[in-house]
Length: 118
Image (spheres, helix red, strand yellow):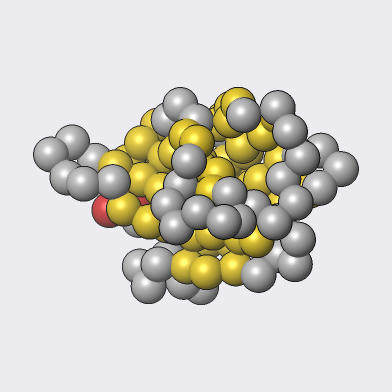
């Protein structure tokens, strides 16, 4: 399994970015796809997840109402639309994939930097 994240960048507070995660190497039926983020000196934290089959979503409280996770099954791609960005959203963002039978994420992509200026 390979996960390729892209779409990070520099944006002013209140702006928007859309991250993409292109997944390859197998079909992802029954898998869960997630986005995490990490800042220096802090642990990686959960941002959002989506089930591949049904599109059920889950969000961290800190991003609810601002971020939207979605997937395009035809393109094997997961997106994270980030609106109303805040400086505290600045982090390296990672996409991850979890087998349906697993209780942890099994595969990780490389990170993409998101920087939000005040």
